[in-house]
Image (cartoon, rainbow, N blue to C red; front, top):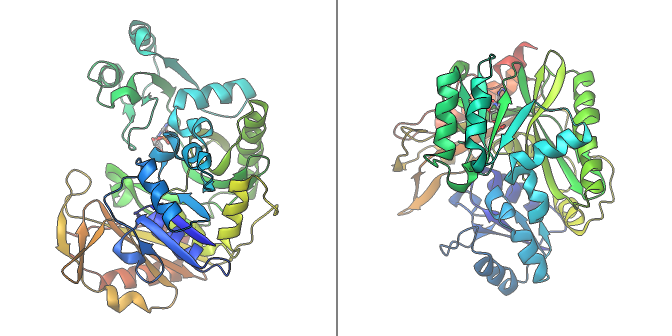
Length: 428
Ligand code: AMP
């Protein structure tokens, strides 16, 4: 089988790494891919964006691709799977209607409320209802309050307002200033929940849903969850703080009812269903659904997967999963992300990266590239999150040491990474 992966971040590098191990896969292509994929995938970087469906279909047809695996959410929400399927190209990732679970928070909230799926309480307002939204916010007495842009906003559309003024400002940012364009023309105002978060990534073929092992990610730039939100500074799996009871409750109260709800709505969901869940006083609540693998959760989950991923994705895409569960390596996995100078406010590009050769052959270590580029025979930063060091080990203490020892070899100007990834797992 020949597989084409769409995207070029750490998640896609990890997918290419895992898929390339399959006995059933002859060749992996990635568009655009990244320099870290050399040796496992042929990168096709012709300046074709993930939203250029026609250009990508040309590549798939020219290379005789058997399966396209879509990494990021934007092309899925824009309907890449529908387009490719229309051209007879088997594509892993939900069709446009199904990807609405990530594409519209209001859609998901309605589904949750209709089918009794456990989620945070919220009200939804369309742009024509701006005045009503203001009145609603003014009537609230509990703060913080969460104001969310309905559509895709590159992870920036969730505003946590500490008081009424901030909440009204957040509403204006979405509806009046249109900071998130059309994505913010509908706004959701949600109760603020306190607790801890977890990510459950599941595979679905439209009929059954198979959960993967739990992961937790770190959104803030600095240790101790300080500073600005980022695309994710690290992750680990499994998550010892989550008891079997809570995990099963999340499946029973959120994941499985969502599968049933989608079927009852005649929505054929084939792909990754990724639930962002907050556990508050031992009750799991859905915060959001994503319609693709998470980044950087994928880099901590897939290295633990024992099964051959490629045929599983293929079966999902065809709507005929033959397995009922996945098998997992008992070891722990940690991914520590190194970001470029100034991230997330600014993004430095072109800083040379050293030490990659030193970690290449280390046991139980894989470096997944994200924001890197080739620069005259060297590898340099290309902004944002630059790379992730993933380590496997028997316990979290050992795994953390391996990851951080490896990271110390890698250097670039202004490099920043958190030192506390999976620290809390070590304590559990
Ligand atoms: P979302 O994109 O909806 O997952 O939101 C991004 C992040 O905002 C989440 O990972 C949470 O940390 C935070 N968040 C979102 N909704 C809530 C909420 N209702 N209560 C508390 N925190 C929230």
